[in-house]
Length: 253
Image 1 (cartoon, rainbow, N blue to C red):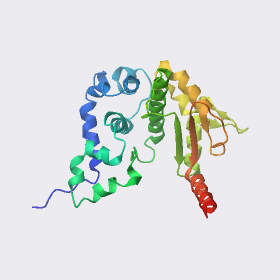
Image 2: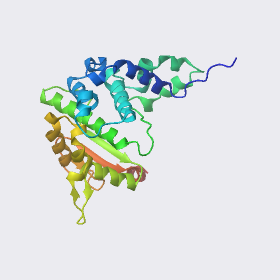
Image 3: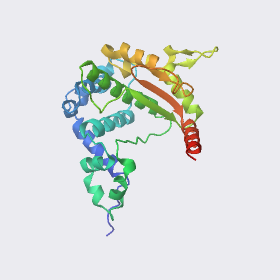
Image 4: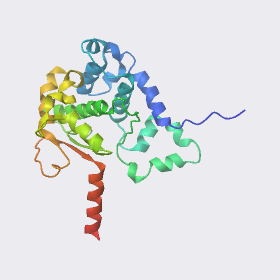
């Protein structure tokens, strides 16, 4: 009798199982996860996923987007893992003991010694909406903490969004700044931030988040040049980073 096949994605499977447990009843606003996150995060989760809030608007996150958002929040805020090996130890410790220790050796490398999450979503399944939701989660938590005179290093208002090519780069600019007019300016009302505001942000924080985006987005041409006083959303494509790396290498030589 052959041995059962090894799970190729043990961390994802473990997070999924934990999510189902913690989020049981979330549609009713009574899930365990709501007691394990900040009040700001709990308010966002109720706004995004409770049945009452979902029924009040015309569009919502689909189940794949919801799972991606929740898995990230659980990994970062509930488990509080600051390294990849720590996340494995908290979510899928048995996976580290399988085989000959290759996985354990891999996740303990220095390059994994910081919070990092990979969300595998197919083309057209709404990755940009997930990106926007996670940005809202980070920005609002950081903002509320600062308003209360607290430093919470788990959250930030400084973001670098890197696209794989120019087509996706332009799509990201559309999402954050709105579609381009004939004169080159952008119509913010057509952005996801404005058009989908009732989904992304609860009413009490909506205007503040909108102002943050409008004042702090930097295109690739503005990175390092545009002054932003209370945070930044820098949007670029990876080619710009590759070119910058090449220039740094030449300077080093």
